[in-house]
Image 1 (cartoon, one colour):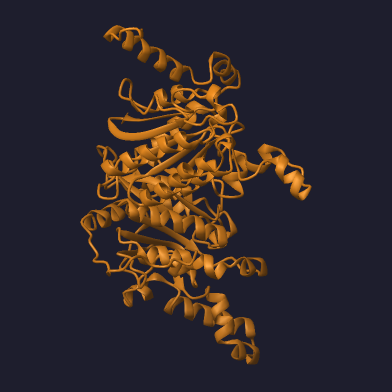
Image 2 (image 1 turned 135 degrees about the vertical axis):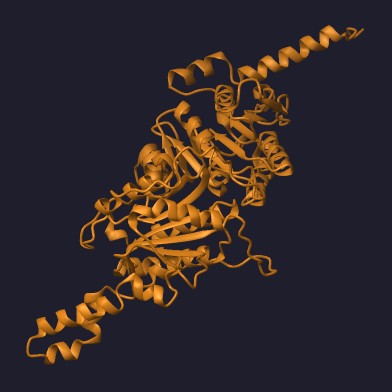
Length: 520
């Protein structure tokens, strides 16, 4: 006869199953990870959430496959830990793939667990964090695993612009395991320990004959500098999860909430006379725009995004009076701050993220135009540059633009000016808001007159002085309401804060439509 069940016997059964789930692939596999300088999935979860707050969901779910030896390989949890808890007191949903179980591969149940978690996060509109460590789709389960994989992509897309989605890449991820993170808002990679590839070095060699290491193919350095896929990098697991938590601190729970506000302790009326020393009045001299940003924002704290990619433009988060703002700024140190294919993409996606999550945009402008050249034209600078135009025009959050020096050509519109829906357009007295720089404009307008003059150089200099006085200054733009205020550099912080205060309750009615068609 079967043994009579008791409360105690079933509690023991539960404890045994939970212990198997906690061990994942077993003690040897856990020790191997530790020896490689990596944490287990559960250790990562413990680091992310406030102590004692994590609630695991579907912890005993396991693969139902019986083919290819799966009956002997299945374990409770099926290689992924899912659940919710609080991060700095705020509700967050998260999953952590367990590479000790079949390499963290995405099987049917594994995928369904993540899909269920995504559904729950979207129901209550709370941020979603993925701690990814997966070799891709589980071959042992064949095509059946695709439902969960495809379901993840579908839900990432449904959640886009509704809840913040952050992906931490904490191991070597391949194939389908990199596409879900690619749809999310931000990706963090661990240096020398995480990788993102569609196909690995062995497949590439067999198909194309190219030989490459995993690190050179899809390491953190590649994706943070060349592809622009990784928004941040971290030196180890602990630093990676600390970055996740820091990033969450700037973001709202969902698209209907305001970003977290902290107590303002930096004087909103603080002025800074050194700004005139930082930014040379001689437009031929470069400077680091970060030095301007750090002097203006609260306590000089600027959280830069995609710092190593497309470096002629700077994007990132800061606070003004304790409230989150998104910053888009030209970088005069790189190509004089020109816009190119990659910098346009980088800025456009960040602008759209900020707009989706109620984060005001501050634009610091010193731009000579789009970067010229055959390569840029052939790479599609027209199409890519149009993404910035579209993103700014579409954005309904407060948009404040400050012209520091150069505002030339079509890049003026790309950085959000009057006519592009800017709410307040500010300028320093040395700024020039023109189609072309003065010398080039004069050479084109007065080409014949200069050639015919008795003293061409003197004639050109006179025309340049005249053009400068009439057009190449913010006062002419202000007289035409193309600049709303010309401000003293030292007063940049208080002036921006006053503009943000005035726009805090901004609302703009939107036309009824499914969505626009951004020039991707």
